[in-house]
Image (cartoon, one colour):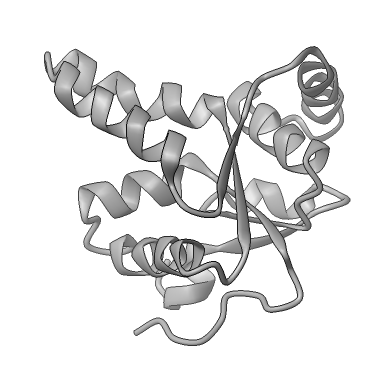
Amino acid sequence: MVTGLIAPRHQRILLDTSVWIYHFEGNATFGEAAGYVIEQLEAGRFQGVASELTLFELIVKPLQLGRQDAADDYETLLSYFPNLTLEPITRAILLEAAALRAHYRLRTPDAIQLATGLNSGATLAITNDEGWRHVAGIDTLLLTDLTGKR
């Protein structure tokens, strides 16, 4: 069971795509924790930030399944979700992402996500990717930290 505030000292939090996927798919292991994070965002407990890359990552599967309606729903949801800023992928973010990828050996999507958070002033990233914990300048909270499940 997940309860309490996520991280009261963090006002701006980066949400990785995995948080949205686990929530939308009702993942048996992490769906509840992901839903809790999204509920806290919606309630205004923190300001959220996500890269436009999240939109890209979310709509691929619906498009593969011929579900343009679901892809459109994801786009609308992310574009108008309360307390969430969907940040564009700019040259500055790509340059920062390249530096992060080179230094920490991150995958390109992870580097773009983290560069987006750092560039927008996020002090915490919520993900389920253990590799993010090593990145300087931003704290990381794993969904496994909220559930105690691995």
